[in-house]
Length: 401
Ligand code: 13P
Ligand code: SF4
Image 1 (cartoon, rainbow, N blue to C red):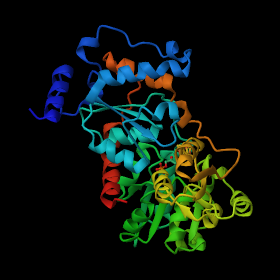
Image 2 (image 1 turned 30 degrees about the vertical axis):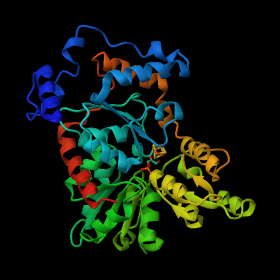
Image 3 (image 1 turned 120 degrees about the horizontal axis):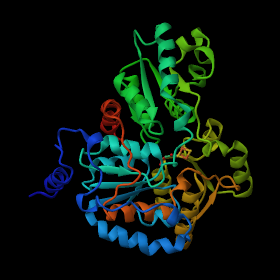
Image 4 (image 1 turned 90 degrees about the horizontal axis):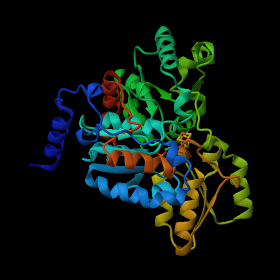
Protein backbone atom coordinates (compact mmCIF):
# COMPACT_ATOMS: atom_id res chain seq x y z
CA UNK A 1 0.00 0.00 0.00
CA UNK A 2 1.19 3.55 -0.73
CA UNK A 3 2.54 5.30 2.41
CA UNK A 4 -0.12 8.02 2.44
CA UNK A 5 -2.97 5.62 1.82
CA UNK A 6 -1.64 3.47 4.62
CA UNK A 7 -1.51 6.49 6.96
CA UNK A 8 -5.09 7.43 6.10
CA UNK A 9 -6.21 3.87 6.66
CA UNK A 10 -4.38 3.74 10.00
CA UNK A 11 -6.12 6.89 11.14
CA UNK A 12 -9.41 5.49 10.03
CA UNK A 13 -8.90 2.34 12.08
CA UNK A 14 -7.60 4.09 15.16
CA UNK A 15 -10.19 6.82 15.16
CA UNK A 16 -13.04 4.74 13.76
CA UNK A 17 -14.10 7.53 11.40
CA UNK A 18 -14.45 8.03 7.69
CA UNK A 19 -11.50 9.94 6.36
CA UNK A 20 -13.55 11.62 3.67
CA UNK A 21 -16.56 12.02 5.91
CA UNK A 22 -14.75 14.89 7.59
CA UNK A 23 -16.37 14.86 11.03
CA UNK A 24 -13.00 15.70 12.50
CA UNK A 25 -14.37 17.71 15.43
CA UNK A 26 -15.84 14.49 16.74
CA UNK A 27 -12.79 12.41 16.10
CA UNK A 28 -10.71 11.12 18.98
CA UNK A 29 -7.35 12.86 18.83
CA UNK A 30 -5.30 10.19 20.58
CA UNK A 31 -4.03 6.87 19.37
CA UNK A 32 -5.75 3.82 20.78
CA UNK A 33 -2.83 2.35 22.67
CA UNK A 34 -2.34 5.57 24.64
CA UNK A 35 -5.94 6.27 25.48
CA UNK A 36 -5.64 4.72 28.94
CA UNK A 37 -2.77 6.93 30.15
CA UNK A 38 -2.79 10.65 30.95
CA UNK A 39 -1.03 13.42 29.08
CA UNK A 40 1.94 14.66 31.13
CA UNK A 41 1.67 18.13 32.64
CA UNK A 42 3.47 21.13 31.18
CA UNK A 43 4.26 22.43 34.69
CA UNK A 44 6.76 19.61 35.16
CA UNK A 45 8.72 20.85 32.15
CA UNK A 46 8.58 24.59 32.84
CA UNK A 47 10.74 24.27 35.96
CA UNK A 48 13.58 22.59 34.04
CA UNK A 49 16.58 24.36 32.48
CA UNK A 50 16.62 24.86 28.68
CA UNK A 51 19.68 22.69 28.05
CA UNK A 52 18.14 19.68 29.81
CA UNK A 53 15.47 19.61 27.11
CA UNK A 54 17.79 18.94 24.13
CA UNK A 55 18.24 15.20 24.60
CA UNK A 56 14.56 14.72 25.41
CA UNK A 57 13.41 16.65 22.33
CA UNK A 58 15.80 14.66 20.13
CA UNK A 59 14.66 11.32 21.58
CA UNK A 60 10.94 12.10 21.24
CA UNK A 61 11.54 13.41 17.73
CA UNK A 62 13.31 10.21 16.74
CA UNK A 63 10.55 8.06 18.20
CA UNK A 64 7.94 9.92 16.13
CA UNK A 65 9.91 9.43 12.91
CA UNK A 66 8.02 10.22 9.72
CA UNK A 67 4.75 10.60 11.63
CA UNK A 68 5.70 14.15 12.63
CA UNK A 69 7.20 17.19 11.00
CA UNK A 70 8.46 20.21 12.92
CA UNK A 71 7.95 23.47 11.04
CA UNK A 72 9.92 26.47 12.30
CA UNK A 73 9.56 30.15 11.46
CA UNK A 74 12.79 32.15 11.17
CA UNK A 75 11.96 34.22 14.27
CA UNK A 76 12.13 31.20 16.56
CA UNK A 77 14.94 31.06 19.07
CA UNK A 78 18.04 28.95 18.36
CA UNK A 79 17.21 26.40 21.05
CA UNK A 80 13.95 25.64 19.22
CA UNK A 81 14.68 26.16 15.53
CA UNK A 82 17.59 23.76 15.61
CA UNK A 83 15.02 20.97 15.88
CA UNK A 84 12.93 22.12 12.91
CA UNK A 85 12.75 19.75 9.94
CA UNK A 86 11.73 22.63 7.76
CA UNK A 87 12.29 26.37 8.21
CA UNK A 88 10.94 29.27 6.19
CA UNK A 89 8.94 32.46 5.87
CA UNK A 90 5.15 32.35 6.05
CA UNK A 91 4.77 31.48 2.36
CA UNK A 92 7.30 28.67 2.38
CA UNK A 93 5.88 27.21 5.59
CA UNK A 94 2.32 27.26 4.25
CA UNK A 95 3.48 25.41 1.13
CA UNK A 96 5.31 22.88 3.30
CA UNK A 97 2.14 22.40 5.36
CA UNK A 98 0.11 21.84 2.20
CA UNK A 99 2.60 19.29 0.85
CA UNK A 100 3.75 17.25 3.85
CA UNK A 101 2.48 13.70 4.39
CA UNK A 102 3.25 13.68 8.12
CA UNK A 103 0.39 12.85 10.45
CA UNK A 104 1.37 15.58 12.94
CA UNK A 105 2.60 19.06 12.13
CA UNK A 106 4.25 20.70 15.13
CA UNK A 107 4.26 24.39 14.30
CA UNK A 108 6.98 26.42 16.00
CA UNK A 109 5.59 29.80 15.05
CA UNK A 110 2.49 31.78 15.94
CA UNK A 111 -1.22 31.03 16.02
CA UNK A 112 -2.19 32.30 12.55
CA UNK A 113 0.52 30.11 11.00
CA UNK A 114 -0.78 26.99 12.75
CA UNK A 115 -4.35 27.86 11.73
CA UNK A 116 -3.21 28.20 8.12
CA UNK A 117 -1.53 24.80 8.31
CA UNK A 118 -4.77 23.29 9.62
CA UNK A 119 -6.77 24.86 6.79
CA UNK A 120 -4.34 23.42 4.23
CA UNK A 121 -3.96 20.03 5.98
CA UNK A 122 -5.55 16.76 4.90
CA UNK A 123 -8.39 15.53 7.13
CA UNK A 124 -6.11 12.87 8.67
CA UNK A 125 -3.42 15.39 9.65
CA UNK A 126 -3.27 17.30 12.94
CA UNK A 127 -1.58 20.61 13.68
CA UNK A 128 -0.05 21.41 17.06
CA UNK A 129 1.08 24.78 18.44
CA UNK A 130 3.43 24.11 21.39
CA UNK A 131 2.21 27.20 23.30
CA UNK A 132 -1.34 28.39 22.65
CA UNK A 133 -0.37 31.86 23.88
CA UNK A 134 1.91 32.36 20.88
CA UNK A 135 -0.34 34.84 19.08
CA UNK A 136 0.36 37.86 16.90
CA UNK A 137 -0.61 41.37 18.00
CA UNK A 138 -0.99 42.46 14.37
CA UNK A 139 -3.43 39.64 13.59
CA UNK A 140 -5.45 40.68 16.65
CA UNK A 141 -5.88 44.19 15.21
CA UNK A 142 -8.53 43.02 12.74
CA UNK A 143 -11.53 41.34 14.34
CA UNK A 144 -14.20 39.79 12.17
CA UNK A 145 -17.01 42.03 13.51
CA UNK A 146 -14.99 45.15 12.71
CA UNK A 147 -14.19 43.91 9.22
CA UNK A 148 -17.86 43.08 8.56
CA UNK A 149 -18.84 46.58 9.74
CA UNK A 150 -16.27 48.11 7.41
CA UNK A 151 -17.57 46.08 4.47
CA UNK A 152 -21.16 47.14 5.24
CA UNK A 153 -20.09 50.79 5.27
CA UNK A 154 -18.39 50.32 1.92
CA UNK A 155 -21.53 48.66 0.58
CA UNK A 156 -23.66 51.58 1.78
CA UNK A 157 -21.32 53.96 -0.03
CA UNK A 158 -21.72 51.88 -3.19
CA UNK A 159 -18.04 50.97 -3.19
CA UNK A 160 -18.55 47.22 -3.51
CA UNK A 161 -20.55 47.53 -6.74
CA UNK A 162 -19.34 48.73 -10.16
CA UNK A 163 -15.64 48.10 -10.72
CA UNK A 164 -15.84 46.65 -7.21
CA UNK A 165 -13.47 46.11 -4.37
CA UNK A 166 -11.47 43.02 -3.48
CA UNK A 167 -10.61 42.22 0.14
CA UNK A 168 -7.05 41.04 0.47
CA UNK A 169 -5.59 39.92 3.75
CA UNK A 170 -2.05 39.44 4.89
CA UNK A 171 -1.30 35.94 6.11
CA UNK A 172 -0.93 37.51 9.57
CA UNK A 173 -4.66 37.41 10.28
CA UNK A 174 -7.14 35.04 11.88
CA UNK A 175 -8.67 32.24 9.80
CA UNK A 176 -12.11 33.92 9.87
CA UNK A 177 -10.62 37.03 8.23
CA UNK A 178 -9.09 34.84 5.53
CA UNK A 179 -12.50 33.19 5.08
CA UNK A 180 -14.15 36.62 4.84
CA UNK A 181 -11.84 37.46 1.95
CA UNK A 182 -12.28 34.08 0.23
CA UNK A 183 -16.07 34.36 0.34
CA UNK A 184 -15.98 37.81 -1.28
CA UNK A 185 -13.71 36.96 -4.18
CA UNK A 186 -10.52 37.92 -2.37
CA UNK A 187 -7.34 36.20 -1.30
CA UNK A 188 -4.44 35.97 1.13
CA UNK A 189 -0.88 37.14 0.58
CA UNK A 190 2.39 37.03 2.46
CA UNK A 191 5.19 39.58 2.44
CA UNK A 192 6.86 37.59 -0.34
CA UNK A 193 3.95 37.65 -2.79
CA UNK A 194 2.03 40.81 -1.83
CA UNK A 195 2.76 42.45 -5.16
CA UNK A 196 1.55 39.44 -7.16
CA UNK A 197 -1.62 39.37 -5.04
CA UNK A 198 -2.22 43.11 -5.61
CA UNK A 199 -1.83 42.57 -9.36
CA UNK A 200 -4.26 39.64 -9.21
CA UNK A 201 -6.81 41.81 -7.38
CA UNK A 202 -6.41 44.87 -9.64
CA UNK A 203 -6.97 42.66 -12.69
CA UNK A 204 -10.44 41.96 -11.24
CA UNK A 205 -11.46 45.16 -9.41
CA UNK A 206 -10.72 48.85 -9.18
CA UNK A 207 -10.01 48.93 -5.48
CA UNK A 208 -8.43 46.84 -2.72
CA UNK A 209 -9.29 46.63 0.97
CA UNK A 210 -6.01 45.49 2.54
CA UNK A 211 -6.05 43.83 6.00
CA UNK A 212 -4.58 44.18 8.59
CA UNK A 213 -1.07 45.62 8.03
CA UNK A 214 -1.19 49.18 6.75
CA UNK A 215 2.58 49.24 6.25
CA UNK A 216 2.85 46.18 4.01
CA UNK A 217 -0.17 47.45 2.06
CA UNK A 218 1.27 50.95 1.65
CA UNK A 219 4.76 49.72 0.73
CA UNK A 220 3.40 47.28 -1.84
CA UNK A 221 0.97 49.71 -3.48
CA UNK A 222 3.57 52.49 -3.58
CA UNK A 223 6.12 50.19 -5.25
CA UNK A 224 3.47 49.54 -7.92
CA UNK A 225 3.24 53.27 -8.67
CA UNK A 226 0.12 54.10 -6.64
CA UNK A 227 0.67 57.49 -4.97
CA UNK A 228 0.06 57.91 -1.24
CA UNK A 229 -2.76 60.32 -2.06
CA UNK A 230 -4.72 57.37 -3.51
CA UNK A 231 -4.49 55.39 -0.28
CA UNK A 232 -6.60 55.91 2.85
CA UNK A 233 -6.36 54.35 6.30
CA UNK A 234 -9.50 52.75 7.74
CA UNK A 235 -9.61 53.10 11.53
CA UNK A 236 -12.02 50.47 12.88
CA UNK A 237 -12.54 52.55 16.03
CA UNK A 238 -13.98 55.54 14.15
CA UNK A 239 -17.30 56.03 12.37
CA UNK A 240 -16.91 55.17 8.68
CA UNK A 241 -13.29 54.38 9.42
CA UNK A 242 -12.63 58.07 10.02
CA UNK A 243 -12.45 58.65 6.26
CA UNK A 244 -14.66 61.11 4.34
CA UNK A 245 -16.84 59.37 1.70
CA UNK A 246 -15.29 61.33 -1.18
CA UNK A 247 -11.79 60.25 -0.12
CA UNK A 248 -12.95 56.63 0.11
CA UNK A 249 -14.42 56.88 -3.38
CA UNK A 250 -11.22 58.30 -4.83
CA UNK A 251 -8.91 55.81 -3.10
CA UNK A 252 -7.45 52.83 -4.93
CA UNK A 253 -6.29 51.17 -1.72
CA UNK A 254 -8.03 51.16 1.66
CA UNK A 255 -5.48 50.22 4.30
CA UNK A 256 -6.65 48.72 7.59
CA UNK A 257 -5.18 50.51 10.59
CA UNK A 258 -3.03 47.64 11.84
CA UNK A 259 0.71 47.24 12.28
CA UNK A 260 3.42 45.01 13.67
CA UNK A 261 4.59 46.37 17.00
CA UNK A 262 8.02 44.80 16.44
CA UNK A 263 8.73 46.23 12.97
CA UNK A 264 7.14 49.57 13.75
CA UNK A 265 10.02 50.23 16.14
CA UNK A 266 12.47 50.67 13.26
CA UNK A 267 12.67 54.40 12.47
CA UNK A 268 14.09 56.53 9.62
CA UNK A 269 16.72 57.90 12.00
CA UNK A 270 18.07 54.36 12.48
CA UNK A 271 18.77 54.23 8.74
CA UNK A 272 20.33 57.71 8.90
CA UNK A 273 22.66 56.58 11.69
CA UNK A 274 23.84 53.55 9.69
CA UNK A 275 24.44 55.74 6.64
CA UNK A 276 26.48 58.13 8.80
CA UNK A 277 28.45 55.62 10.85
CA UNK A 278 28.78 52.63 8.53
CA UNK A 279 29.42 53.81 4.99
CA UNK A 280 29.02 50.99 2.46
CA UNK A 281 26.64 49.00 4.66
CA UNK A 282 23.41 47.89 2.98
CA UNK A 283 20.14 48.44 4.80
CA UNK A 284 17.65 45.60 4.34
CA UNK A 285 14.26 45.71 6.04
CA UNK A 286 11.06 43.70 6.27
CA UNK A 287 8.11 45.36 4.45
CA UNK A 288 6.17 45.46 7.73
CA UNK A 289 8.40 48.45 8.55
CA UNK A 290 7.02 51.99 8.11
CA UNK A 291 6.97 53.47 4.62
CA UNK A 292 9.51 56.15 5.65
CA UNK A 293 11.98 53.43 6.70
CA UNK A 294 11.38 51.33 3.58
CA UNK A 295 11.94 54.36 1.38
CA UNK A 296 15.39 54.88 2.88
CA UNK A 297 16.39 51.18 2.74
CA UNK A 298 18.40 49.53 -0.03
CA UNK A 299 16.13 46.48 -0.19
CA UNK A 300 12.93 45.07 1.30
CA UNK A 301 12.08 41.44 1.75
CA UNK A 302 10.36 38.65 3.62
CA UNK A 303 12.51 36.78 6.14
CA UNK A 304 13.41 34.21 3.50
CA UNK A 305 14.37 36.89 0.99
CA UNK A 306 16.54 38.69 3.55
CA UNK A 307 18.45 35.45 4.19
CA UNK A 308 18.78 34.79 0.47
CA UNK A 309 20.08 38.29 -0.19
CA UNK A 310 22.84 37.94 2.40
CA UNK A 311 23.66 34.40 1.23
CA UNK A 312 24.22 35.62 -2.33
CA UNK A 313 26.24 38.71 -1.39
CA UNK A 314 30.01 38.57 -1.92
CA UNK A 315 32.51 38.24 0.92
CA UNK A 316 33.17 41.58 2.58
CA UNK A 317 29.52 42.75 2.33
CA UNK A 318 27.83 44.21 5.37
CA UNK A 319 24.15 44.57 6.26
CA UNK A 320 22.01 46.42 8.78
CA UNK A 321 18.84 44.35 9.01
CA UNK A 322 15.45 45.65 10.11
CA UNK A 323 13.62 42.58 11.38
CA UNK A 324 13.20 40.39 14.46
CA UNK A 325 16.33 40.08 16.58
CA UNK A 326 16.60 36.27 16.74
CA UNK A 327 16.89 36.05 12.98
CA UNK A 328 19.35 38.95 12.84
CA UNK A 329 21.57 37.43 15.55
CA UNK A 330 21.52 34.04 13.83
CA UNK A 331 22.50 35.60 10.52
CA UNK A 332 25.32 37.54 12.19
CA UNK A 333 26.72 34.35 13.70
CA UNK A 334 26.30 32.30 10.53
CA UNK A 335 27.88 34.78 8.13
CA UNK A 336 30.75 36.14 10.26
CA UNK A 337 33.07 33.21 9.38
CA UNK A 338 32.23 33.84 5.68
CA UNK A 339 33.45 37.42 5.92
CA UNK A 340 30.02 39.08 5.91
CA UNK A 341 28.92 41.40 8.67
CA UNK A 342 25.31 41.56 9.86
CA UNK A 343 24.00 43.97 12.52
CA UNK A 344 20.55 44.97 13.68
CA UNK A 345 19.18 48.25 12.32
CA UNK A 346 17.93 49.30 15.77
CA UNK A 347 20.61 48.85 18.41
CA UNK A 348 18.03 48.10 21.09
CA UNK A 349 16.99 44.99 19.07
CA UNK A 350 13.36 44.19 18.25
CA UNK A 351 11.98 41.04 19.80
CA UNK A 352 8.72 39.31 18.90
CA UNK A 353 7.62 38.25 22.36
CA UNK A 354 4.92 35.92 21.07
CA UNK A 355 7.27 33.99 18.78
CA UNK A 356 9.54 33.76 21.84
CA UNK A 357 6.83 31.95 23.77
CA UNK A 358 7.70 28.68 22.03
CA UNK A 359 10.35 27.39 24.41
CA UNK A 360 12.37 24.16 24.43
CA UNK A 361 10.18 23.11 27.38
CA UNK A 362 6.99 23.56 25.32
CA UNK A 363 8.53 21.67 22.41
CA UNK A 364 9.70 18.79 24.63
CA UNK A 365 6.28 18.61 26.30
CA UNK A 366 4.52 18.55 22.95
CA UNK A 367 6.75 15.91 21.38
CA UNK A 368 6.90 13.60 24.39
CA UNK A 369 3.12 13.68 24.67
CA UNK A 370 2.80 13.02 20.97
CA UNK A 371 5.22 10.13 21.06
CA UNK A 372 3.13 8.70 23.94
CA UNK A 373 0.02 9.05 21.78
CA UNK A 374 -1.39 12.27 23.30
CA UNK A 375 -2.12 15.19 21.01
CA UNK A 376 -1.82 18.37 23.08
CA UNK A 377 -2.52 21.95 21.92
CA UNK A 378 -4.18 20.92 18.69
CA UNK A 379 -5.24 23.83 16.48
CA UNK A 380 -8.56 23.26 14.75
CA UNK A 381 -10.30 25.67 12.47
CA UNK A 382 -14.08 25.48 12.26
CA UNK A 383 -15.19 23.61 9.10
CA UNK A 384 -17.27 26.48 7.70
CA UNK A 385 -14.42 28.95 8.22
CA UNK A 386 -11.99 26.40 6.82
CA UNK A 387 -13.83 26.15 3.52
CA UNK A 388 -13.59 29.84 2.60
CA UNK A 389 -10.18 30.32 4.17
CA UNK A 390 -8.97 27.49 1.95
CA UNK A 391 -10.43 29.22 -1.10
CA UNK A 392 -8.47 32.39 -0.22
CA UNK A 393 -5.28 30.43 0.50
CA UNK A 394 -5.57 28.36 -2.68
CA UNK A 395 -5.83 31.61 -4.64
CA UNK A 396 -2.64 32.77 -2.94
CA UNK A 397 -0.83 29.53 -3.80
CA UNK A 398 -2.00 29.85 -7.43
CA UNK A 399 -0.65 33.39 -7.58
CA UNK A 400 2.70 32.02 -6.35
CA UNK A 401 5.56 34.33 -5.50
P1 13P B 1 7.68 36.38 6.79
O1 13P B 1 6.61 35.80 5.94
O2 13P B 1 8.54 37.37 6.09
O3 13P B 1 8.51 35.31 7.43
O4 13P B 1 6.99 37.24 7.94
C1 13P B 1 6.28 36.71 8.98
C2 13P B 1 6.10 37.68 10.06
O5 13P B 1 5.32 37.54 10.93
C3 13P B 1 6.89 38.87 10.02
O6 13P B 1 6.58 39.65 11.09
FE1 SF4 C 1 3.13 39.30 14.50
FE2 SF4 C 1 5.02 41.19 14.28
FE3 SF4 C 1 5.52 38.97 15.69
FE4 SF4 C 1 5.34 38.89 13.00
S1 SF4 C 1 6.89 39.94 14.22
S2 SF4 C 1 4.41 37.45 14.45
S3 SF4 C 1 3.70 40.41 12.65
S4 SF4 C 1 3.96 40.55 16.17
